[in-house]
Image 1 (cartoon, rainbow, N blue to C red):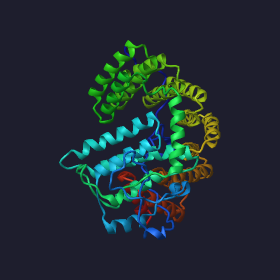
Image 2: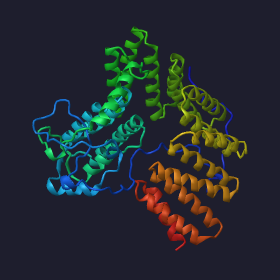
Image 3: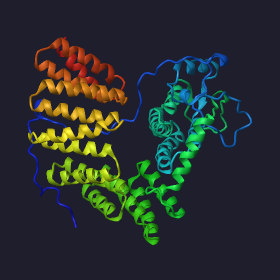
Image 4: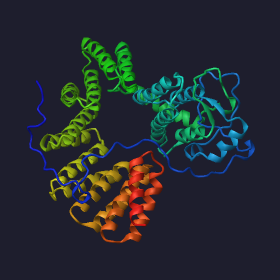
Length: 471
């Protein structure tokens, strides 16, 4: 049965100026980490030689040197770029094949859970596709490598109960070298061979043992089904929607054969995402609904309901959007997912703010309270930015400026320069409305500083044009 997306009560549209518009949907956070690295003291007995990312090769090659052991504190510390420069002076050449091998071995060594391995493998598959081309896209390769590094760092941080950017820092150091992006397994630079410290390895191996004891709802337990599911995911990561859907259909047939409802649910969730990404909204909604009906997993229900809420929100249908956001909050609560709860409440706040209903601030207050219970700086920034937009919309400039200031701080902590720049720009525009050009110029210069760390050309142009207008 087809789904009518035009029959539900819609919020009114407003004149498209900045004061009368609140964004309904924030962009997904960019995972790229561009913050400037701190300096740390070089190791004196190795003449500042870089060891890169640390991992243990289960079958070490004969040419592997006996590197020093490092402490967990050193592992979690920022990587000194001047050390990488010193290494580059020795032999800066490294082939992408060696980088990919090190990356995969690292994921194995730290006991990465299956669902995270799946995500990492997706990014690496995109890289492997590029490096076989005559002219590999180095920017795309670097971007996917950073995304995969972020996933491993998050897992290391959780395992050590301490913030770590060791993988991202290692990748940043590699970017300073002369990388050959044409894949060649025989091109090995022994200067870059590395191993993982025993202390961290022991902890992550214990984490891996605990993971194995748990039934993972996202990875099928049946070997044949698991293989089919992963193949379909690779097609999806490679942006081959038709092939991916066909592969998921084959996996679904196997899931039906063995009556694996949880995997059936996950397949419908994945297919829904493909339809969603390509704007086949009715098909996406149908798939998400089928996913919800087949699962008992609150995490899956959370993701499916949130996705449906976003679709209805984007097509400006209030009632179903709010209903699904509330369902997201409910299931996220059972799954102890505070981030999903907070963001969904903020989304509801944005909807009511669009309608000029002060009820919006009740939802923002709840979202802010929940966000404060997390260590997630990105969600804190999102809630604060949404609150700032709402205060600005209702003409409360002092409170809007406070909220934007809080958003900037959180986005800087979250290493999200694009979002920090946008909130500086929002604050600057308020200052311009009050004819405070000196303060506006100061805020715009800060916005420009962070915007330059991104690839957002439109944002940089907007900031520059605003600066020129008050010069």
